[in-house]
Image (cartoon, rainbow, N blue to C red; front, side):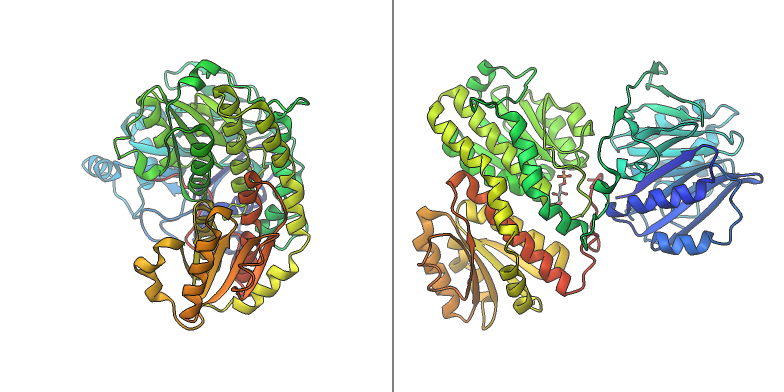
Length: 609
Ligand code: F6R
């Protein structure tokens, strides 16, 4: 997804902007550019490709005197990745430069509007219309011009704007796309995310919906959409600067996989007191409300949705009410049957996924009670939710999620036990037992991470395969969905997840000599059936890797390779089972030489529908 940075201060802006853009590379991009205020007006340099390509282009540009600028990494939506479509966009008059993250939905209409008034366009982007529209309204007052233009914009936008006639300021504005402001000593910043500016300041705040900020090197002034001045307390970011870096690992993804024991412990431990009571700190949802809930819907995208599919099983079993998991992109358009007795659980690492944000709004509109599980503090989903439970996973940089998934899973399990206690569907003693099992998850994950050799060996045997089928039943099927996504997104190997019982209804026709099948066999009630499924695919020539419980000899006897999960209670099994499968995906992708942290075509934060 596009990334925005901006700097206003006394230091040369170019190196700061380039460095900050590099910190946003994890968001996924295909081109990059900068705009700087120079003595002769706004200077733009941009290119298709990586920041390294941009660095080559700007190397010979004399810019040491330029201390104000904006930068952008573009993830193409409207128009191919190309030099001309890259941001920043400079209005034809040279007066206004804009970087944009989001989508201007009515850009075609606005182009016609501006063409009729003598404007022309040279890119295929939706964003170019913003610089020209602001230029059209500009009459010496930058804020008035931006606000006038904003009234005509439909869609989502985070904007960084330079005016040639106001060389000492940046204007920032956002709606439905993230933007933070960083406060420094005699310098100020804007960025799409915190790692971009962490090297320069730890004092940040998030710009609210439709807020406009004017940044000079001495001050930042913020106005709401009605023009009232708004004061923001800054948040001190305590992360070690290296927490946003790789810290000695080859990739962010493997670093984040290894951070899981700590991330899970940090997410659950502070919410469990010495008497094993769960403390979630709800402000508006009361015990009475929880007793009155008669159904649950979990909605999210991608891996976060997969968390919901796993959670559905134990929420239903534990609370004995209907529970559904639905893709956020479908939920919103599916006339969801929900009311004030429905609990909608929203799951999102970034808190900015637009489909999920819209699903949240739909749920609220229909009167549901809403709890969001979010990793990024004060993100849009967090801000708009009735109740927020933060996963304390720390920044997740690799595009493929791992530690966010694990912490989401643990937190939703904790929510489930919390509700079970209030509704009386479990006794205190039963809940205590489950909590103890959850407290043991970090150690269980650690023991899997201490023994990666067997997974590396299996990866070395199969990294050249063309197709992989993940099969499982019940929670194992839910986990297969995530395991399959992990493999395909970073290794580009075609993989599918099937409910094992469905195989013989069609997909088994794809199994031939040497096809790799990964069978998840941890769900004890259906183990016999999984063993039969393994025999069925083996009879057709498949090679089978089985993920099994510590004491399972039955599956071991039929599979080609096994990966054992350490002894644990049922509630912990899912959290452990996913770990070797994340590792397998990682080592396979690594052996194939893939760009693991930034897989092709993918973005970390998907802020478009
Ligand atoms: C896959 C992955 C994505 C995200 C999805 C939702 O590894 O990371 O499928 O899970 O895009 O993102 P969030 O959780 O930020 O809403």
